[in-house]
Image (cartoon, rainbow, N blue to C red; front, top):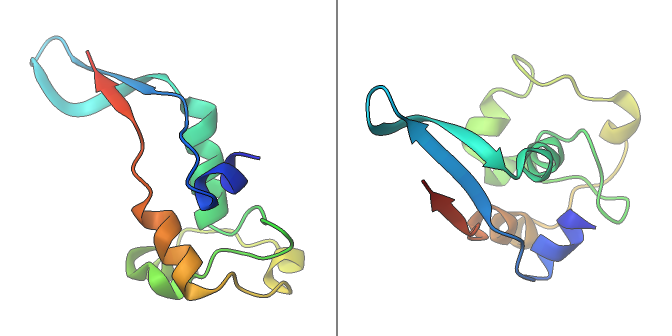
Length: 102
């Protein structure tokens, strides 16, 4: 349902991040709220899960496409599914997540 919400441009709950108090910088943020949602987003981009029996089109995301065989472990059954159209995949990447840094 989360992937469906992003594709349909529905708003998502806020993601909450915390900066490293020792360095007072936002480098290496800690996720306080939204870990499961971020995991689902990355799982979709990395073709670990499907949306409407379609997989994310990695060709629209060069960094992910480059790491396809190096980092990702693609499920052979998911590999058999067709790609989501490039336009929708690109819009998925451009979806703006609401975040708050504390």
